[in-house]
Image (cartoon, rainbow over the protein chains, first blue to last red):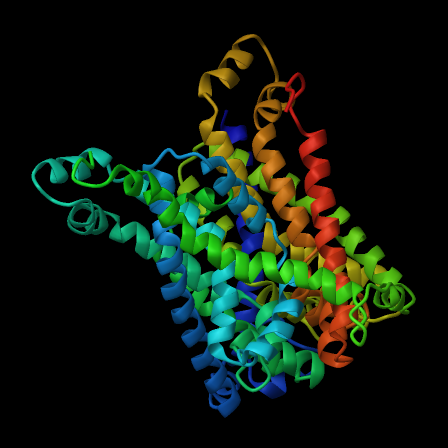
Length: 269
Length: 289
């Protein structure tokens, strides 16, 4: 019995290390002084750590602008995705209607739809529509990519708010809209916030569409792909960029760790 | 409920609520999908149908390697992800003290993008990276070995597969943990009472019951594997060509949206084909639909 327990813990430790060690290493690489990074033989643990590489990365104008662009796109995406998907999610959670299965099938199909196939035709269309190389254009695409997931999350959030409460409010004289705004919405807010966080991570991490749709208004991932592929950026720049991409995501996922499984579990059902 | 409203409007409510999302997806998903096929198969001057772009794609030096590498990487990474995710999910399911922390740690890569994962593993695999530093220090190697060079395509593919397994196992694990939680616990207990070993319980009780979850996980992972881009580009540049990477190069480097669209359509068709295949083969026996 104890042997079994020991094996369990050993396996859990091993798997945890497999996930955590690479993240620790990129943090270490990004905080190693530049000259130590290129020295050989390279010590496994650097003699000193410094923020020099990170701060010179963050002080570049292109990086700062890309960071701002990423945040703006993510913010726009959250607003758009919430506005478009909340009504649909509400309908799926509260109504039985003919064509409901078709809607669910449509959500499933768009979920499976590769972003890779969308980016090129949208870039061509956006040039015509005057949306190419704009933050709004990128946000429109990120909204399309996140929509099926957000609809599913929102539907499950509204399903968690008992319909009886809404009906009680209406029997006391509230209109349907009033009951929604004063009873259901306040109770659904934490869940909707979680949906917004999911949307943020999706937009913050999206690489392919952002890369194809921007030239002067690159998001952080698009800027990094461009500098790595087209300009052959040096290693220390890549490490700093990698850490910059990972850190916000790590902080967020730590904050919402209790809802992780529910949130992602809903989207893959 | 809605006595004060005209009945027609009440019946229309769910449709009105779904309408914005449906319209949005029509403009930004269905339309570009049709457009991708049109761009890939239409003559830009006359507007008529042509196979020229497809022919140009297929005769390109990078085309067959891109198809081969994409399929190879998928075929290697997806089974490894499923096995690793299954081990994680089964460990979580034992509910050992600390299993919530373990679950959280395993879920961290959910929030890591393919680009970030590529850059993370670059710090290990690059010539002066941590892997070489460790191997030389421990006396396994005399001088650093270049894992990411065109001379060793097997190592390159190995590095990409490792990175993909590291990054994408988390989503498979979430599917499987959710699936395991739905199973009644007494099934496994009953099997144990009748003398089934741990392995027999897994093979004959848990895995068959997990079939729907496994199916979901396989579909999600395979479709996403065809979109493989940033990990490959950061680790190998174009040394390991893949379909999504070629879409990118044809669009941004050669400025040819037609051939890029032909690639995009190919990714689309391959994804659809695999989804259909999985749904057919993993369908529980005896069910008609």
